[in-house]
Length: 330
Ligand code: SAM
Ligand code: DTB
Ligand code: SF4
Image 1 (cartoon, rainbow, N blue to C red):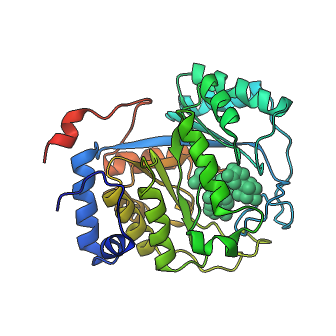
Image 2 (cartoon, rainbow, N blue to C red):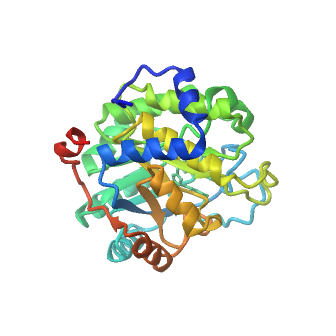
């Protein structure tokens, strides 16, 4: 097996990997992971919802869409000082990446965006990798964020192009791809992944991975979320995501995108440490830490510290470039 950085995958090739018997798949993914990355390291990112709820979009999974009654309280854009306090606390607790999320359809060129630009500068000055997820962006807006020191922009495809309209009707897959293009052009790293448990087929998952892997550059970071089923949303009664599906998805992403940070994202509160360990074995090397994701619970820093020492994992330092020799050995 000679995995390489490729951008011409076919869905059949990805399906063959995805359908590999589970332990064989984990073994292959672990081997690729070992070849390209430091397997003892896990990147620790913290999320903060800087503007919560009241969103005009109809994403069927989302607690922040105004049209569903989910009990999420609408909160206007936070003050910069308050955000920097959270970032400092996250840094003190061991986080090296800070991601600010806003329940916006798209960024508008107004005072709120000016404030986000100041937040990006502030978090960057703390020495953390700054990430934002603010909805759709124009090329100019992406450049302004880049100039302020933005390190990464999160914009998920969520699912396959074919399944997208079952989940969201207020924007298209191509809108999503256009924003990702703008982020790339601005020289900001791309964080783009999806959610499993939306009622999609295995083929939809494979097609989403196909879109990600065949981008001109692989996203530097690919979050794999398990649906957090939220009362009041159309997906409230979706069945819990099977851990084996999560492992399959992570392992496949790892094999086809060897150098990408694959993030075990939403859904960890439902997973045991043993299940998370299997995800790390299968190539996950990044998590969200801190007791809240955007609006839903997440394991605490203390719980994750315990897990890290149990599994012999260490947090990855900020702005790390992978040394060349790792790709040349094994
Ligand atoms: N509004 C912006 C957008 O949609 O890009 C940024 C924030 S939005 C909440 C960021 C991502 O969170 C979504 O793309 C989705 O992948 C994820 N997400 C939201 N609700 C979720 C849920 N209930 N379970 C799992 N992931 C979820
Ligand atoms: C991502 O892929 N997952 C994070 C982050 N990127 C922005 C968000 C998960 C949100 C889960 C639901 C919530 O807490 O509101
Ligand atoms: Fe709005 Fe983003 Fe939630 Fe969709 S996922 S409803 S765009 S906050």
